[in-house]
Image 1 (cartoon, protein in one colour):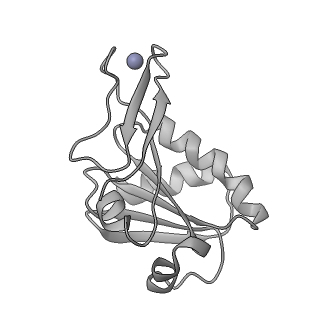
Image 2 (cartoon, rainbow, N blue to C red; image 1 turned 90 degrees about the vertical axis):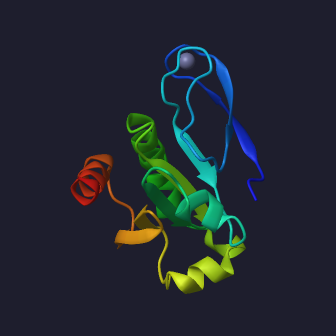
Length: 143
Ligand SMILES: [Zn+2]
């Protein structure tokens, strides 16, 4: 079920694009054909389509509305998704709205970050980290 879509403004040409939360390919700007950042939300019922069947590696951000460090790390994760447009998808999961995923991934602290490729967890870490550390973690895991 690919429910919601977001309107994403192309960072290259400014065109507004409709970007689905799940798709077979990767989102590209309809005007300039550059890859678009792919930042979506998922819950228990959409995680399989949105994250596990993704054609690109997925950074999962398991976060909570009441969590201060989650708010700190969120802009860094979105920056990573912009830098790696076409190569990384950011999937944000509100743990309070996704009890099955919280249990499945044994989330004991938020934020918990997972790196997935083809539905398999390659790496995980808990707690906020600065952008350079996150960048290194993602690159070392996926390369
Ligand atoms: Zn564009």
